[in-house]
Image (cartoon, rainbow over all chains, first blue to last red; front, side, top):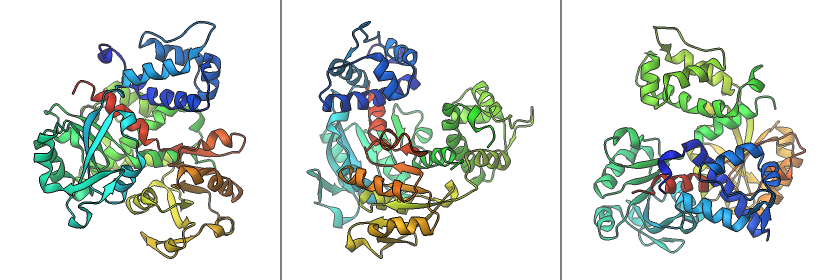
Length: 212
Length: 212
């Protein structure tokens, strides 16, 4: 954790991919992996991998390969996955339901404790055991339950108002599925935002398929 | 298009963000933007921006700023957004519905012409005017309609079988929302895959919020 400021974000952004790959290897019952195999299977050069791991002090054992479980655990520690923060999800439209049903928040370091919507038809429904509550009660809920993070899946038209309420409720961490630029609007607040830009991914796909 | 092989993918991956930013500026009625403002508002150094644009021959006019519409159009051309490829979506669970309703495929270079599912209850429903058809007919449909791309939103458990059918139907371009590693399984085929890894995004958020 102490090294956080020293590591460039592009390196950090590669860590989930390593983590995911190592998780698959573990599921397949593997115990060790050579840097050569890691490099071949991940499509990265061995030097790139060494360089990435060296940012955190290196995990390698020359000529002996990596212990998969240990390496995965260390990367998980760096990412902070072992410590949960209390989280809510706002908006159970299609995207909100998909996220509520699909994601395994616990293993990513988030404790999803409530879901909020403004449509009374949604109240009381449960997704992965988590209940939908009235958004009118969100401020009180967040303050009583030490909630720090929110997943924002509301329509773009509602985003500004919802985010303002969440900021007032003490939310500091946003996983943002809307086009509302939270960081720009609240740049003086001490907040953290990760935007999910589906459009960007689709444009990249279009580029990659130009010659098809 | 001829320059495609020369440009590093990390540069390409920044283009959608420029494109999105320039689109916002256009919507606000702006015509020109200085490289200083572009740099400040996007949180990139001016030298980074110049370097990115130079990969494509540069769009700049020293001391006069950029013409926003022109710059946006050129980036769109590089990404290939102006030429549509025929596309289907498979799987109308929550994620499939969210994608079908939310995305503006036309403006990203994709022509979504049909949606497929295996659940008869879904047949005949429409999302943004596009009808849900029986997945049993997908191969015939793709061959008759020159379909090249598929958005795969099926459950992980169905992914292997669905992708095999799509490969046999002539699909070359995959926007993959499952955990099935299409590229690994079909690495000898001439295909293109963009994976949407929600987990990676969530892990990055967890890292960024370690000190909160």
